[in-house]
Image (cartoon, rainbow over the protein chains, first blue to last red):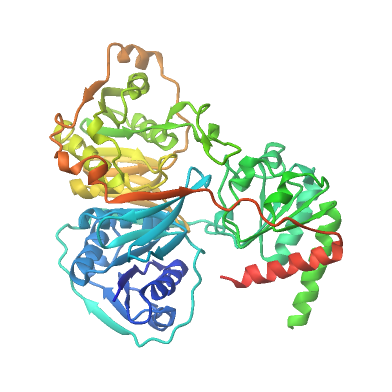
Length: 326
Length: 261
């Protein structure tokens, strides 16, 4: 029987979405007779135990001593390590967030075990080993990582696994652990940033523009569609170099790697360096005037034509869809 | 305040912008020159921005990295070390952080500040810095965007978070992992160039840092790459003849993608 601990990160005092996604994935990996533990460190005002339970946890452990009042990687890692020492899990999962990627290596160093960063796939092999898959060389290749000792630990990317609904009986345990090291950092103030967390790396739907979009008005069309679709706009290198879109929106080897569920490429020819950034997207569709553009080979479906004529048509279809739902 | 002592860790990496994928889907690194890992360059620049700071720069890697290190003397490094030993080969982040922590214990035990890059372009794990901090029992801040001030006993930094930034005070000795700072690395000043004269890299082996041979290299690395594969690249490429049908298909995908959280 497998035992899996998921570090349940808090965001604004609630369990973060990635944590819930991981609890559901852990449930699947642990199978029905295994145990999934959600580990909370801190004193959340709104811990949403019900939602953690529904996501698939059997047990919620809360470390809520005063020392955990404020986040500090040293003390938090030691707390998590103490729980792991006690529970002896087979697997430990963390979200590949700023906090998760800071904490996880501290915990695994204390435990003396390995860690795979920023995974996009997790499965048990037939011989009971965890196989973690992660992109390498800017998504040019993927590597499957195995471990030589338990617990098998990984940080996992957002949005790769879905939060699901399970019907589990969940117990909540408040635990005291011995922390040797005093807190050695202090957070003075948080400065929230408008639009943070809304970067293209986190987008579920992306509308991308390339050299074929030609001008500012063209990008305005893409923005209209993005607005209607709840999507983000991104761009190819050619478009950012023309100044049509901001550098931060560049996708590809010299830009960002994205993993949207749906990617619509408009006026993008499909240079290898752009493709390298989009291969982990769910479905890819393309619009291009050149029927021989390589982008079509890398797309699930496409249309040969002018994006400026097709985009308004898609917007119209989305509006019809919404009316039907109402 | 008194003189600050800082150790900066840097790594030599192939220039990722020049790595191309070949027709057979293998990686072509022939045009990729070895460069200093971009985040590490910002880490050194952050150290250089602190006045009255004695900087030691160290790197683990093959002998060829000496050339890169030597050049860093003109960018504020007073001492340069290359940890190079065949026995280090194959180390993952776990074994690497052991080697670097051993170096600190042996050569810069009085360093107030350990600076390293947030992430390397060839490994992408961001695990070595936290590993060093944990092994040494130092405080840790990652994803740092600015080293704002150094006071007696602590460093004040700006850290990137999921929803913005925050200011964090880290007690000395501290490990600070720098993502990027507000200014680009500056070319050496004349004073720095003169001061750099004669400073050469010292090469150290596993024995020099009292490394336990059982804790270094491939055998001491708890993770292994089982296989490397190329993700599915080519897709169906179904071309719609009818614009209406295409628009409907896109709208359907958008609906599905939005729901699939």
